[in-house]
Image: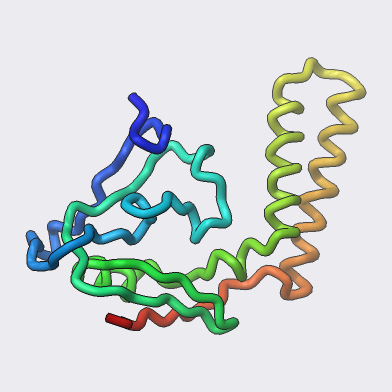
Length: 161
């Protein structure tokens, strides 16, 4: 059953184990863009390719900005339990640092070629396609070694209102 964004399933990520929290007012907590605009990895990945959409049922306690070492910023409304979760374990990667446009293009090409490779019968065409996949993977490895792919961590979460 598809949800409102066409994703197969919506998964509740409300951190009730921290507290059954409902003190916020107004808009809902929106750590994953479910309430405003579905974003996967800060908008660098296609939501249509995701199996799930995560959301929180708490009301937001404030607006926050997440900033990486390179200065990339992301804004979100959060409840205090999500502030805690993000600060403790969800702030290790900046999507824009880890997935610059060239990386996204290579990854897309690898995924497309891999799907084609699996659909092919064994033979010369399959062998050459496999070689091309390995060449593209090697390009990704070289980008990482040159420092073009990085984490941007540690990320800083700051309340702005």
